[in-house]
Length: 132
Image (tube, rainbow, N blue to C red; front, side):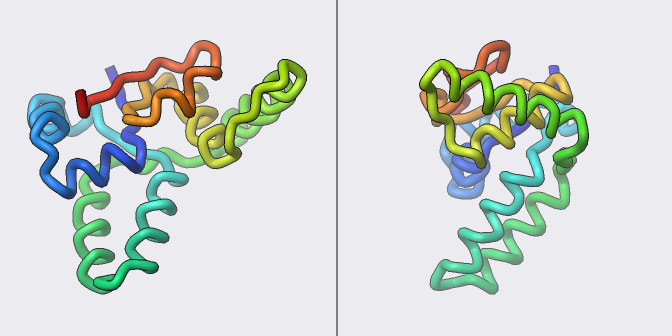
């Protein structure tokens, strides 16, 4: 199984959350990835932090070990379809979350997140929460 790790779980790992660290250690490195959206979110958080230089270095060092999955044409098709469908149903999902979900669906990835309620409206998106 291949996983895309959401920003919150990446942060938990960096902060040594015991359950998250255990799952990372017990998962093959080639099964772990994150999306370009999550990469961007972590960089943004580091840039706005009080210790930006230190945090940027730690994030870059960590993320260099993970595959960064890009937003591509397949992801764009899925994003557009999902957004239209969700709007017709009266469901709102934040665009950043929808971008992440679209990348996961386009690439057959299970999304690992602590924010499952942000993503549970998206049909067919496999979810896991490693922080429980």
